[in-house]
Amino acid sequence: MKKRVYLDFSIIASIVIFFTYRWFTEREDAASEIDAIIPWILEVKKNIFEMGRIPMWNPNWFCGGSFVLMFKDLLNILLVIPFTFFFDYYTAPKVALVFYLIVSGMAMYHFIYRILKDRDAALLGGVIYAIHPVHLAVTGFHGHMAFSIFYVFIPMSLLMLQKAFVKQNTKY
Image (cartoon, rainbow, N blue to C red; front, top):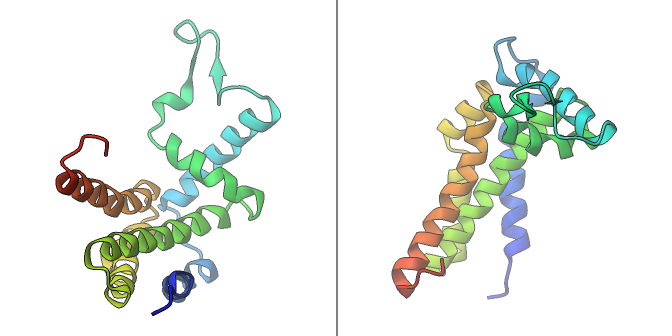
């Protein structure tokens, strides 16, 4: 059987997009984390690209420091900023959430294929993991960016543990 990785990845991506297309047609409630993160995205992007400095640097605060270090979603903001170059500030976090769902499905596909060596089972596992109701509810309805990024690292960490146990090597 020929390799069909790109076909499998496109199937995972199309199924995730099918289940999440309504995120872009309907506006979320005001309590969403996406609405709360937009001003921070604007501020961090302005500080990095226009002023060329560490985001929100204040030299008079504790002998120099950044206010963003106190903000728990700095990683989420930094991972959304590349999407703001192509989309507006309200759509970019949603595109990032969908992108992380697709990448999590691809990571689970890779993990299952490495264990079972069966592309059909890996495709099914990747699709089920990407469109799992908990993933869609947490990322789509609540807009928790940190959880959507965390779902990508679960299959990767499991693959790392599996390789470490099989090879009995600390390299992984």
